[in-house]
Image (tube, rainbow, N blue to C red; front, side):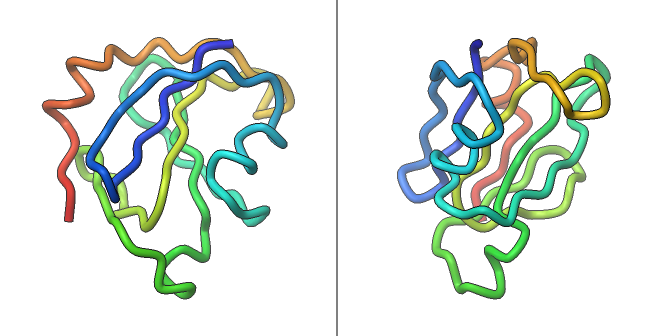
Length: 101
């Protein structure tokens, strides 16, 4: 399924194919995942919940969601996160909503 990866170290946004939460963990680089809702279409931003504690470089913020340290992955979960679906967030819209810190 289509996911969006935000890499604050390079200030890049790209789409990738993922299938499971393990794929998200691999992209983020850590097992300690947390997520926050972004927008009104059901997409969620997954990130390393311990990124600030680890001192991970590269930070970003989408709208008023808490800042994230390290990479973030946007997907559209269903069933309370048990299954995933394609992200529907528009990348160009996302570029306007994101701040690199």
